[in-house]
Amino acid sequence: MKTNTSDFCTGGGCTAKLGAGVLSRVLSRLPKGPEDANLLVGYDSKDDAAVYRISEDTAIVQTLDFFPPMVDDPYTFGKIAAANALSDIYAMGGEVKTALNIVCFPESMDLNVLGEIMRGGAEKVMEAGGTLVGGHSIADSGVKYGLSVMGVIHPDRVYQNNQAVPGDKLILTKKLGVGIICTANRVGEASEEAMEEAVDSMTTLNKTGAEISRKYPVHACTDVTGFGLLGHLHEMLDGKLSCRIQAWDVPVIKEALKHADEFLLTAAGQKNRNHVGDQVRFDQVSFAMEEVLFDPQTSGGLLIAVEAGQADALTQELKIAGLPAAVIGEIIDRQDIEILVEGNNRI
Image 1 (cartoon, one colour):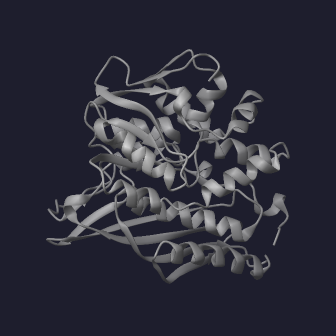
Image 2 (cartoon, helix red, strand yellow):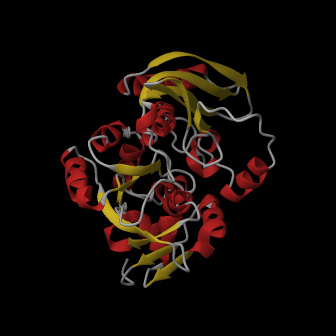
């Protein structure tokens, strides 16, 4: 089912997120209750989900994510939104158990559209091995959809986003550039092949990557979404570490570089640059590649910090499983600049 793009797809996905700087200011002013020793991960570390211990060998992983459409097919949008929400459980190293629908929908719009959105979401929940158990809907002026997801994990095996150590290698499991491709598609400039590649990436669960990673000494993990690779990497470094990124090794949807050179960019990407740009130094990196590194990703890949000696083996296993994974850099001791991105001017 196709909808009228001007009515349905008005620029959504993770490009619709509030900027990281705005969120940080708001969260810093929230009142905090008494400390709870069983709350293993809250919002203080800017992690992907909350983790709460309920027994010696079980903790609950809890997350929520929803947004407006970024594609004009409702069924595809439902799959993307669900995959994106489920990803937070995988980024923490968890296993999906249940999900609740979150729906905002205009009463004047064809309910078949809503049915297709929710069908796509339900299929992804089942693919994740979870159970859809209900949800909540409100009448709204625009379409928004997502999930609240609950997973489980052993309390000693939680992947936090800020526990990397110097010497760790950084692995990215999906290509960057989906935000730029979706922007180009909205104005009729993206090729059919590039849009298909972007949709395939956004609808791919991070389940396989997470399951494979559990065999290896992973120190930190996050998923790359609305704050772009560099924004989420900034959170991973947590003001304590630095890193070097080799731009030529970063997996990218190639057409995204072309559209970045044509200034088909997202406002969210510019917010990301404004928020974290002063923490980044580019050395012989093209403007287009800079923009891809700031580009907000919807249902992006996992960014994994793993013990250096195991990085190649993990990357190879991810590739065998069909993921475009690559080692893109390494964690180092804190330097005068937080993130150094090295290129050769063609990247």
